[in-house]
Length: 604
Image 1 (cartoon, helix red, strand yellow):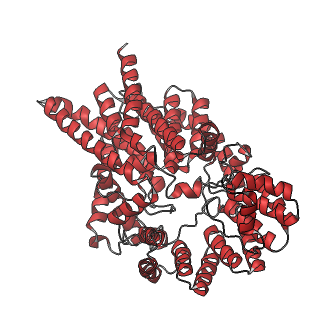
Image 2: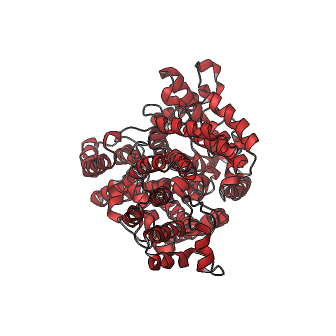
């Protein structure tokens, strides 16, 4: 009966605390990577169109170069939009629910392996109150982290009950959520070898049995690998990270290794002392370590790593050792120690490794219990820390409400990051401070002349300053450096379209639509085709990708404009009625555009 009460209490706490801690982020917009992954994704349209194709498509739809394949995460977004609509509110709510469920399952696993329910609750609360989790929960794309851990914990719980086929199924779902789930395999092997009930802590003679049981998970790995290859092709085991996003990838062996241990140390600092959190730590913010003795942080990282490994082999407590295995196995995937990832550091990536830290905290409580004379002091100190962490989470959620908040906070916390500097220049650009934006962008491009987002933004900025030739040159360079960078294609295509170079615009925009048929590129390609007196092709283009009743008003206008130029005024007026101001007559609305070769779209 006591166990049931503990589980109910943990479930209620997980749900309530998740919404208390992260609820003030529900009203946030799609920000940062959300706009790349979700907004405009043809599979996240609220209609479940082509749902099955998600499982043979890269994470960034139609773009295999980043080397990312997370179809179950994309499928969850598609279902999210279908059931709750396209507003970011529904996506935030689901993220919080998933975090609550993951936290509860983390408690169940802790409870299963711990000799003390106090240790289980301590580790559970530590996991729930970590401010470094804010990016994983409040940033919508952080769902990949949550889902992968959710399925990994579920698979571990089933494996402990020797339900290996079901465990293998959940492991497969974890892999489909994010590559991080591969950490399940070493964790599973450890628990098979060393856990017996909830108290064993010594080597078991069942090595052959453990190896035999791992065979249950091989089909999941093979099936996942096949699907991943279908989706990514030659980019199956590659990523397109540049020196800006992951300088470790391009450093010499020892410099990269020392830098990776510096990052290891920084992750732990950001976990336990979560001050000055940032959405990016790219090139400039974490300088490469040339020699080990020149970096105290790198040396501390190595020392902590060695201490943790020593505890793994010398320790006897199953909870502590399990925590170390969970931490090291999942951290290894993102560590850049062997395999170079797409980023040098990102807070959301510590979501799964932090479960191991939660286990270790639980083990510390078991050790402290009989050694602390006044437990009220201990619990009081823990309560103060949790309350402090809670306020930090609430404050951090506000940073993720919109791009402006996020970019300003990231720039304040990590001002040397080239990405954060680019985003700061974007804020200046949006505020109409083009000279200030130019100054920042010039500094960025001096340090990182091949940083494509900065090249694209600089092109936009020069366009506002009337220097169109510079804009053209920068966008061409961006496309040359990264053949799938759609923003540069769109910017260049719109530049040609607005200045009457319709054939050039058509060529550029056709290439962009071939890469990824987003509605924005399809829109301007359709308008360009109308300007080239090809209204039938414009209509066919929109119908092919978005049907005859697209969600975007701009596409409905483009259909109306194409029909109008084709001479089918009845069809044209039908679409115009859907987009024009009801107070404006059809004659006045038509008069605004009639006779124009170039239509500049504003607010309808």
